Image 1: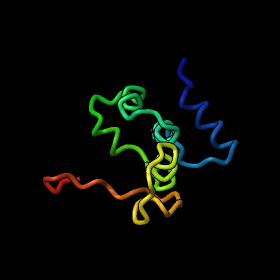
Image 2 (image 1 turned 180 degrees about the vertical axis):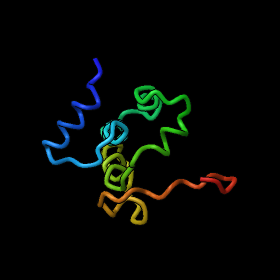
Image 3 (image 1 turned 60 degrees about the vertical axis):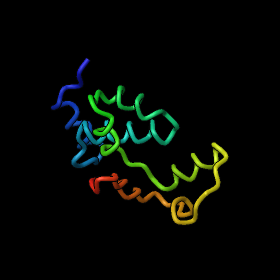
Image 4 (image 1 turned 90 degrees about the horizontal axis):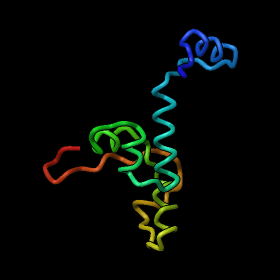
Length: 100
């Protein structure tokens, strides 16, 4: 069942939420699934992306999430990668050919 656009806009206005779009919620949901340990390919499927590369660039993966994953799997944390437990996004991974 679709939530009519007019009703959604009215609900957001009454709640004091400005500029909220469906894709904002979709983006956040995908990022939260990744932070909770879902495999990237499963998140890709949930978001309906044809290519995992699209999913990788679409999500916000944070240093805090990386640090928590490293602790959960018993890996040592590297000071330059995971010690900063803020929520700033990680820089894009550079491929061997220099692309991101």
